Image (tube, rainbow, N blue to C red):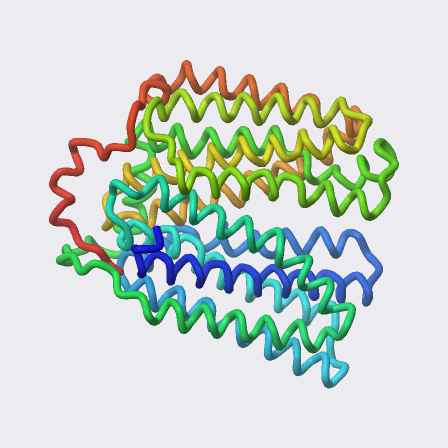
Length: 411
């Protein structure tokens, strides 16, 4: 992938922007808790980030398919930088408040709702189709690296000074903007767009009409909703594993470490055959790892289970993301990516909510076990409902995309 200079620039830009975003969220969460002392307010931070994706999904996809995707990404990252400056100014003037921080989270969440689907839609314009699985694996590793390192770096620097966190975040965001500005994607002739309302709804209709695409997206939605155990990690760390705050940090990092290692391996040795079968196997391993974590009472075993869970999820993510990009013509990638982002964000948020509700009824262990078994059942059910998925052998575009060789790249 090193020879693909535009992709490398975008990869670096994603690492920089995501590092900055993760650090900002660490700072904001800490400041909110310091001001209010409310666990509910911490929960609201996640909900507020999620709201823009729900409200703006269809519009975001439409915009990503009509306008320069690089400019959309730069604009979103510019908003990140402005928020970092605003928080820095408020810190210096001792003007931070709960509502001001919630407003910052809402602005960040709105910018992220524009940035992420557009970034995903931009990737296929930067690499040859034959390299797409390796590109997706490398793309996944960029996110996992930033998710692992960003909070750790943010927490360490915050201990020195919150001003340094804001300043470094601003540097990360400006670096990402410069890197995106240097990207020159392949130029493909533009195709005329339908009227705005029809264009907005076309992406949703396309997903519903494409069985492989709808199956891949909904598989992720239901597996993560049922198998999401991360919301209960504090309970496991304190009450079940007796591992304390240090153990909680290790538990939170374990899935990302497993995913990062797997994504790095897949970027060098991509899955090339029996794609559908491998995807369902990964989902099954994800469910079994969730069950193993739920039953474990020994910290090393719990960490191993979570690392395997993250590794299996990384395999599934690489396959699903590759299929979504390959199955979608470029003129619709913005709309499809926006809807896919909404499903991913929904699954994470609803999965945490589902785990919490079940834990209140049957306990944390029961909640995790139900989630793991549920993920296995979903995998079995989707194999029956979407037979076209399990028979996919290679990453190949549908024959119906032949006409799309002349389709526009709105990059």
